[in-house]
Length: 115
Length: 114
Image (cartoon, rainbow over all chains, first blue to last red; front, side, top):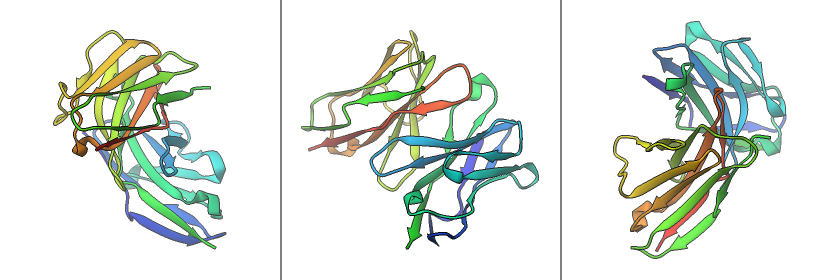
């Protein structure tokens, strides 16, 4: 069984400030972990993914995330927020076996960037 | 590469009618496609998993006779909402997967049932 918990349904940061979106996972098997971004009335765009290689993963638009097995966390960060980062962010987990490739999503975090 | 399209992007239908939503992988062959439903301000809920040429696997609580899924080819899956009612109004998103781990998402279809 897999689950994802995103702490904070809403996060507000000032433009230029650090962005930190939290994600903790639970998985009975070694996980693959993902962060997706969703803009209003659009589908999901992959920001980055962890697939058991390097624990620090760099993604698009300056985002990165670090897999910490001891903390079962995969928090998303960006050093300096931009207005265009305002969106909904979803953390997701899947198993590494092909039979367990379904994604389980967290509840999402709405990021607001203040001018 | 790895583009998934959905058609239509928005649809309004009357209660009791059926609506078909198409999901296409444009530049790759998808062994598996997934259908999700998303209510406003909420996360994506997996409805069903479909593999080309076989019956879809529905998640618990999803009525298979109401949400008909057909995955006739490696590039096309369809979701038909039969006898739609206002409570079926939602944002429906599909995704397509190859043999590797990544899913590619479509842009979504906004269904409004009046």
